Image (cartoon, rainbow, N blue to C red; front, side, top):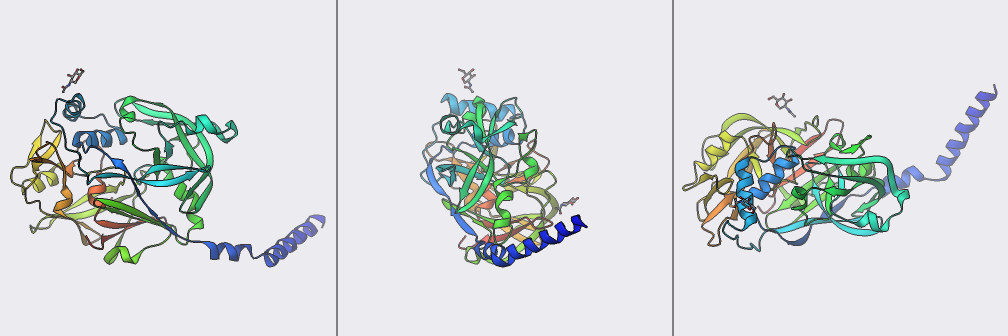
Length: 395
Ligand SMILES: *[C@@H]1O[C@H](CO)[C@@H](O)[C@H](O)[C@H]1NC(C)=O
Ligand SMILES: *[C@@H]1O[C@H](CO)[C@@H](O)[C@H](O)[C@H]1NC(C)=O
């Protein structure tokens, strides 16, 4: 009997608490989404081999010798100087960590919040914020990598706070990684299964805050030659045209995976065939199966798969067809203009293509920024995660 009495009393207390303080109700009303706009953080030299090498490393694969040779030639200064292209700025997202603003690269293709080459936690934060005995380690296929200690801190984006966010702060960074240090770090928005913290993988920022958002989703609208936006918790109808086409997302590998069902080059025939893919804001280019890439460039006069440049190039003044990829039965079009990615010589005679052969990087195609910059892409963490695609308004 005493046990039962205690139980009843506890119940009564709970119900009184709930009735007298409208906590749940207030919390529901306060749920709000927000839109995060990227900020321009300077310019970067658009190097095709550097981007391809970065993607191989990100997916844990050794960089092919011919890409390394092309990269070395650029770095040694033996390759022709690439003109500074004022149009391709580097865009980052402002994030507040424990009271300090940092600029992070928001990456839907990884799942760590990671500060790279940054002294922030060494200098200013007490050891009490360290997640004891945890470490993070990211390995690249060539034996290089990044690793360090793990901290727990308050991380705010757009007024939405994760109070206990795990942050990997690099203490050792190999040179291959250091080459890419225009950012303070990365904020990963893939599935927490990909998290590189051990012994216990930790949740992503989105996983930590999703219950506080009106809907468990974020929508990415990267832009061509302009800062893009990330809408958290809501869908902005003004940012796309037509309907959003939803497909199941395959999260088994921790990525935002999906299937495309056909492709079309320009006004040519639609060519059916499953393209297994992931969306990845952290990869610059669009990596597709060799056969599709060959077919695409066969439609561009003067194009060649260049050993010197480490990828497909073509005359900068060529007529570049649109590339249409069917997802959920609806064609998603990448404008040809977006595929003229970067001049490889000072005279801007030849240009490095935004579509490249993804052979050897992963068992799936990687739909990076070249694909995303004309799309509004909804990432929804419902019971079965799904992706929604629409053509961006005004593209
Ligand atoms: C780049 O420089 C390194 C060191 O000087 C040299 O070993 C390498 O052969 C050079 N590579 C190219 C492609 O020029
Ligand atoms: C993609 O297609 C493959 C078959 O080619 C299938 O096994 C897989 O379940 C599909 N994935 C999704 C997310 O629909």
